[in-house]
Image (cartoon, rainbow, N blue to C red):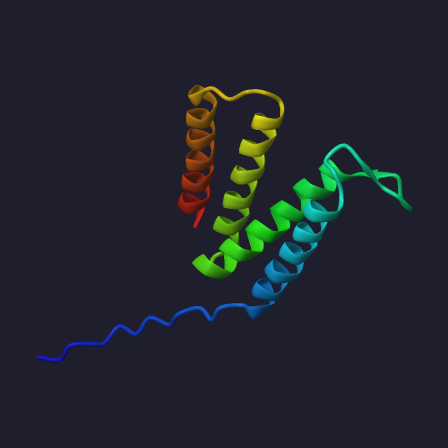
Length: 116
């Protein structure tokens, strides 16, 4: 009897994602400690809130993409965290909205997993 070995290769972790996560996390920390939420960045007249959400998404997506070794899941987790915080910002704090978000992102993950 001859058994064939099935060799599964692991996908290498992209250290570029870790560098992006560290850089955007440092930028996010600087933004949080240097500017109040209602202020504007002085030279560019850009409100701090959209920049906060962009840096938060970039940091979370790249960190979880590195951690899970799957950029799609990292993007979904980053989008989930941003969507949750946006709902909190708009005052939608009921548990029903969290359940809807979880169902939405679980459905999106299942859709993409099924397409593979």
